[in-house]
Every structure is written in C-alpha cells, then in structure tokens.
Length: 175
Ligand SMILES: Cc1cc2nc3c(=O)[nH]c(=O)nc-3n(C[C@H](O)[C@H](O)[C@H](O)COP(=O)(O)O)c2cc1C
Image (cartoon, rainbow, N blue to C red; front, side, top):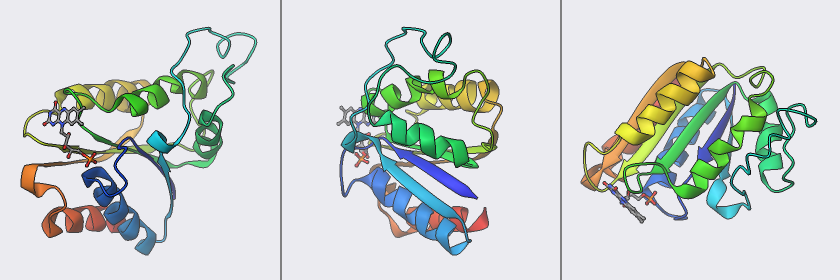
C-alpha cells in the first residue's frame, strides 16, 4: 500500500514524530511505501471557503501553496494516517488547516485509492481524545467511508516508551 502520514506536530524530535517513525519502520518492513508530510514545515493555509473547488475549479483548490504536494500524494494513497499532538483537546492548528483543505480533495469524489485510515495521538493527560476522534470518525470513517485501521494514543510517560513505539511498529508491520 501507499501510506500517507500527515504529522501535525511541530517538534522535530517530538512524541508524535517518534510514534510516526516507529509506525513507518514497521510498515516499511511489511513492504509498504510510507510518505510522511510534516505539515508544520509546510506553508499550508486554511480553507478560504471560496467554493472554487466546488464550482469552476472542479475539485482543484484556488490556493497555490504546499497543499499541492498533499493533493498529489492523496491521488495515489491507499491509506491515510492522521498524527497529532493534542492541543486544547483537538489536533494542532496546522493539521486542522490541512484537513480543512480536503474540501477540494474530496470533491466531486474522494481520492480514488483511499480505503483505510488510522490515527496517532500524543498528549500530556489521559482521556483528552474525544475532539480528535470525533473528527476522525465523522470526517474520515463516515464521510469519506474509510475503514478504521486503528487508533493509537500515548499520554504522559507512555510517550516515547519502548512499549508504545513497539506497538506502533507492530501495527505498521501488520498491515
Ligand atoms: C499549545 C498546546 C496545547 C496543549 N493542550 C493539551 C491538552 O489540551 N491536553 C493534553 O493532555 N495535553 C496538551 N498539550 C500537551 C501535548 O499534547 C503533549 O506534550 C504532546 O505529547 C506533544 O506532542 P509532540 O511532542 O509530538 O509535539 C498541549 C501542548 C501545547 C504546546
């Protein structure tokens, strides 16, 4: 499978990125091709709700920024992984901007090969995932009709622990 990971953490050695890399290592071992986009290193503006994509643009976005790379990767992705630290009970703002720009990618039809989605979340406290999971279920599983491949969370000392990273590696390898 071609797996596209959208990582919403700005921290180069951060907890989310460690989990993403463990996942990618496992998935690579399993023979999958993993592309990681660190959205905080990109210039990706928020959706302007101009409706160009839903009218004259026919599914293309009026904004010409780094989201173009994501749109290209989405065309060939079989699986999408949404990875983020929890910020104020939701995903990071940079990742939210990226996801809002799916407004163009999911119109008039969803990315053709996309079948599965997974979520990776890191937080300081436990039980803070409802906001992110509401979006994952509503937007990716229900609206885009993707299969739930798994949800992985780490809080407090679970972050960066060998056990957690092994869980992510095994998940990647199992796909
Ligand atoms: C702006 C900001 C908001 C945060 N909000 C929460 C929160 O609401 N709940 C929580 O448990 N942790 C919160 N945290 C802590 C991060 O989720 C946590 O440190 C996470 O492991 C960071 O992941 P990273 O290392 O991949 O960036 C917040 C951190 C920041 C910087």
